Structures are given as C-alpha cells and as structure tokens.
View 1 (cartoon, helix red, strand yellow):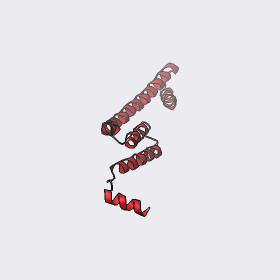
View 2: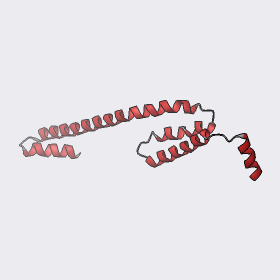
View 3: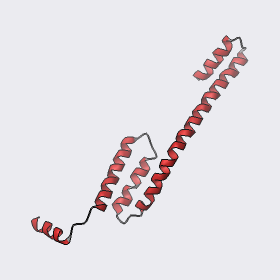
View 4: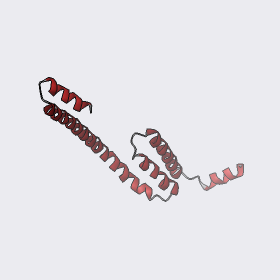
Length: 120
C-alpha cells in the first residue's frame, strides 16, 4: 500500500494525471511484490538442500531396531518444518540425542552386570 501511495504521489508531483499517477502507483506496488516473491523463493531454495540432507540421514534411523530411536527421529523432522521455532527444534534434537546415546551405549559385560546385581 505504501509503495502504491508513494509511486502515485511521485507521479502526481511530477505533473501526471490521476490515471497516470494510479498506474505508476500500481507499477511500484507490483515491483515491490515481485521483489518479495523472488526473495521468498531464494530463501526456500536455500533451505531445500539442508532439509533434503536431514531427510536422507533420517531414513536409516527410522528403520533402527531400537524403537526409541525410530520414534525420536520423527520429532526433529517434524520440527524442521517450522524453521522459526528453534526452541522446539532444540528440544526435539535433545530427545533424539538421548535416545541415540542410550541405544549406542556399550552393554555391560556379564561379570559387570552380575556385580551390579549383587551390590543392589
């Protein structure tokens, strides 16, 4: 709206008619909307590659034998949909990290499990 009003006022000051100032105003508004659309497409294109890499990396984890890891990987993928909600993404990554750490922790030897059972 401001681009339209500014273009129309500029054309009117330069001596244009009402019709000419209206056309200049529409032209300025269209130019602004066009620039905004290009910027939006560029930002979407810049996100496409990281999101593709994240989805590709997540595919094998979704087939993990540990159900906690398979379930936890869905949370960061869902959180990636809203890139402005960084708190949700951080929380989802934390849950995922804990699930992976638990799944990949080395299993205690038979002797260590037996000793731990005795002391409990």
